Length: 66
Image (tube, rainbow, N blue to C red; front, side, top):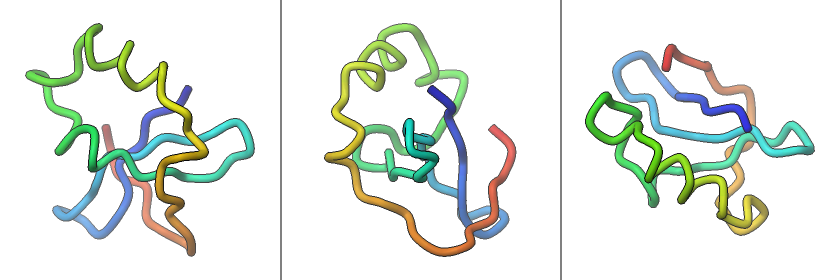
């Protein structure tokens, strides 16, 4: 599981890279990866998701820092 932030500088959204190397949108699950919400509880929640049910982020998007 690889967590990403994608989008324009300052407007990144949380995302995950699935097993097929597709970037999936996590913004309905978490607003952003911050010290307050990047914890074991939320990581477990993300890990249990069906990644194929998450919206696909298509196109060539900038990957920002996490």
